[in-house]
Length: 262
Image (tube, rainbow, N blue to C red; front, top):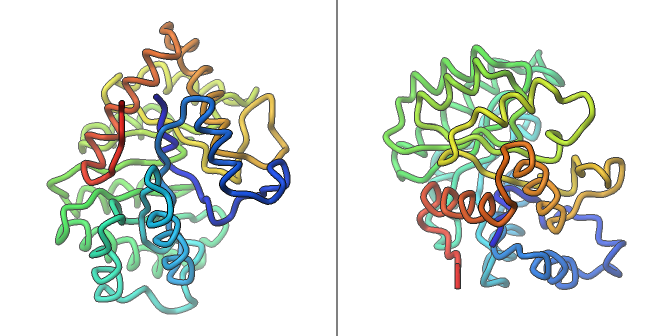
């Protein structure tokens, strides 16, 4: 069984499934995907991801504010975030983090918001889902500053082994997406070979970043199979073994998720 550990079910392009989310999820289930973590990115979509988690037994969700979805000049309120995290199907915080690639001018606000999410993680003991781009030093500095007692994950990882090793040393997991299949991703493939087997997750980040051979098309949760298959070959194991290990890793990192492994 596979888990798509990071997908945006409320944002999928469903044209390949006649506009039906039910059909899209069924297509993923038919390929062995047994659970989905639907990710919150803003206060506006918190209700949507919670509703999807309530609707489907094999969907859980997270709530948080993506660094590129912050309201100008204002970090989200800690009280709001803590209230959202009380929902029984909200199993994680985020995604949160830093993205200086697109909005370097908002670095101060992003750091403030990231600290707020990390404080919520400390208070609730729920794992944090971290987005980081062009902000390596600050991301690691804030994670070290937070000194969380529980693990989190650097999702859709695209950095080098040095950053991966630093995150692993802090107890974090590394999640890989379809980017690892891209032709120009040699450095990332080196990282993918070196991640300890018990710290690896797979994801689609759908509807973004579809793996080869679907690159350039809308991504879907069913394509997490291609990510897992590629990683299995890269690491010299069979796909079933990698699927079982990454599912076990997901359950360890997100113990509140209701994963049915039967």
